[in-house]
Every structure is written in C-alpha cells, then in structure tokens.
Length: 467
Ligand code: FAD
Image (cartoon, rainbow, N blue to C red; front, side):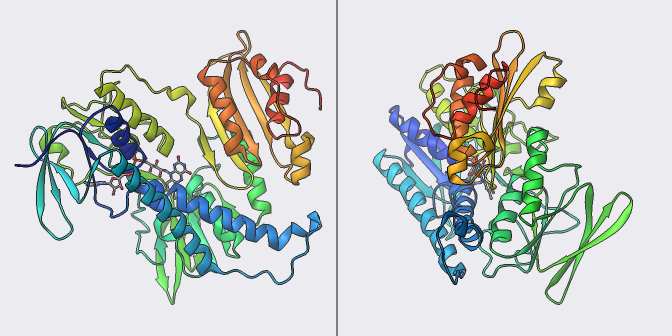
C-alpha cells in the first residue's frame, strides 16, 4: 500500500516547489511530482534563470566590444566564445536546480519524477519514464503544472528553425538573422541577447506597440533605445504563414493591408504562453477550466471546483510570473495549515530585463486614466542622477503616479539601470499603502540610483531638487 501524504504537489516550478517547502515547514507530509528530471520548473530550467544568465553574459560582451573604452579601459581583440557562454548558463541552471533538490531533502519532501494524472478523489497516478506507474494518495492535491509556449498555427514550431524560447536559449551558432514574432518581454529579452552577440534581429508585432501591458510612455522610450541598439521593429504586422528553403525561413505577414516578407535563418515565436492542462485528467475529475483562457478556475483560497484540489501559478489567472507563483505557493500551504494568508495582487512587480531594464508595480498611467481617477505624476530622469552618470548609464527615468487627493501611490514605473532591483522599494511602499510623500521623506543614500525614486516623488509635488 502506497504512503498517504498530507499534500501532493504536481509540478516543481516556483509555485509547486515553494508550496512543497512551505507545507513541509508547517509539518505536512509532502510529495512533489514533476516529469522533468531537474526540479525548478520552467523558471529555473528554460525560463527566468537561463535567460538572465545569457542576458548578463551578452551584456558584458556587448559592453566590452563597444563602450568600455569610454571608461578608460582598453581591451583589444574581443572574441565571442559562445560554447563557454552556453556552458556557463547551463552551470548556473544546474547549481540552482540541484539547490532545490537539496532543499527538498532537507525538508523531508518526497520527490518523484514522472507524469501525474488525477485518478479519483485524493489519488494521483504517476507514470515514470520507464513506463511503470505508481499511485500516490494525498489529503490535498495542488496543481502547479505551469505553462508552455503558445504556438502560431500559421508558423508551427519545428524545433530547429522555427522555435520557442526554450530552443532560443541554446542556439549553437549566433543566427545571421533572427526573426522574433512577438514584442512581449520574452521576445525582447532573447532578441536582445542575440542582437548583442551579433545577429540581425527583426521583431514582428501584431499590435501597434511593444509591451502592451507596460506604461506606454516608458515602453516607447525602451522601443527607441532597442532600435538604437540595432533591433528592427515592424508593428501592426500580422504573421500569416511561412515556408522553408535552403536553410532559410520565409515569413509571410500583412501590414496595413499589404503583404510583407521576412527572411531569416531562425524564427523565435514568442506570442505568449498557455497553461499546461492536457493529460492531467481535469475533465474526469470535474476540475473546471475557464473556456476562454484554458486556465484552471480557483476561489480565493486557490481551491478548484473540486474540494481538496487546489491550483496556483501560471495555471491559474493573473500574470505568468515566477514570483507570483511563489507567493501563491506559500499562501496555499499556509491556508492548508489554517493560516489566513493572502496575496496582494496590487503589489506584484514585473520586469523586462532588456538594457535599460523596465520595472513596474501597480497601475500604468493609461489604467489610472481609464479609472477616471485624479492623479499626480512625478518624473525624474537618470540623466540627472549622480550615480547613473558615474556608471555611464543615463537612459530612462522614474515615473511615480499618486492619487491627487490622498497622495497614495497608484503605480511606479522605472526604465533604467538596475530597474529590476530598484523596483523593490516601490513594491514595499505599495505593500504598506504608502504615499508619494512617504517616499519623498525617506532618506536615500548618496550617490545611488535609488535617489531617482526620491526625486521623482518630490517632482510629483513640484519640489525636485536636482531638476
Ligand atoms: P512552471 O515553472 O511552468 O512549472 C511547472 C512544472 O510542472 C514543470 O516543471 C512541468 O514539467 C511540470 N508538469 C507539468 N505537467 C505535469 C504533469 N502532468 N506531471 C508532472 N509534472 C508536470 N518569470 C519571471 O517572474 N521573471 C522572469 O524573468 C521570467 N523569465 C522568463 C523567461 C522565459 C524564457 C520564460 C519561458 C518564462 C519566464 N518567466 C519569468 C515566467 C516563469 O518561468 C513562469 O511564470 C513560472 O515558471 C511559473 O511557475 P509555475 O510553478 O506556475 O510553473
């Protein structure tokens, strides 16, 4: 007879592994099943981590090859060692995925490799790679199966020339011409990587702008900056088909009623991600799925339409982000332990790791306007920030939106150097329902990039000092 667990988690991504660890910390007997051999899900294996490792490497290469001379450092004969760069990325991934295996062991979590399926109340069948199956019994089941790249029926993936982000993290050669379909963050980040390493990169986007969920003003500045770095953009252009000939992909598209052709040796289709539900046995178990989005429907406690079955992360509604999945993982474990934990969805940051980086929390200016809310804007450019000048990274600005009456923060948007780190202050401020005045009254170390946040808060009240 199989062991009976308090919690069985399907999926060891940031949602599932955090839920498993938190539940074990709270005294539950936990099993976590993943079909991958390495733990950490999309994020650690083929998402956040490998993409950032390549962004960091390619940034150094581009910097050393272009601007380092301005800093009084002369280097001759820069060459790209792509094999080492990819090897370093794989090493970073392995270190972190092994780290999760260590944490599972330390917390007494049973880790099973195999494909899990719901089979009757409180039961899962786990099919192993060798073909054998085992049944796992648990009081509660948590679905954390995440998401996968959405394909474009007009231009289906072939795994070598027309690829998803997964393959674009491991090209063995720098493409001559990479066509990126989709101007979202994944397309822009991976497009930046290969452009920095020498590829011609063309981004084809259906909408009239890149990054449709970002603050339009900052997205426009980032668009211009990426164009200056050599990325070519074709907006309002709809991909309609494609064909392959002699190692080249011909992409057919329509722009303003006219047919357009793009030709490249690699095409990255990055038009979004969809939840992984197939083969999970959701229908048979009676777990409701939103017909439009394909995402599993949950209540405020992450319980699905079936008592005892929960779901989190990319599989349910909300932004498909690792830290959102992690917060939900902790919350569901704590709720199962009787705690009243809730996730504050109004204070979830999002980051685009291009150069400059774009980081945001809360509402964009367009969203605030749509709500018909009276608001104040404070802006401060990195050009006027001492530390940004020392770093030689003066592109971008901080933009703070606050309620005109109460001064409460509504949204903070940062385009600039290390925006990914700077946004944490704004997230904390929003978590504590702070006002712009709270940021303005907070002493910031000098000289730091964070002073731009301080000054933007002052600027909202027409009292910026360095502007
Ligand atoms: P996942 O991480 O997708 O994990 C789900 C796991 O479930 C997988 O390991 C899968 O093998 C397993 N699984 C699925 N079905 C079964 C089954 N039936 N049986 C057993 N196992 C199963 N997010 C950020 O916040 N920051 C970033 O910088 C960022 N960069 C990204 C870059 C790229 C290129 C990509 C693709 C994604 C990026 N993301 C980023 C998104 C992030 O990876 C996801 O939001 C996050 O991984 C979702 O976590 P999850 O736990 O819901 O699911």
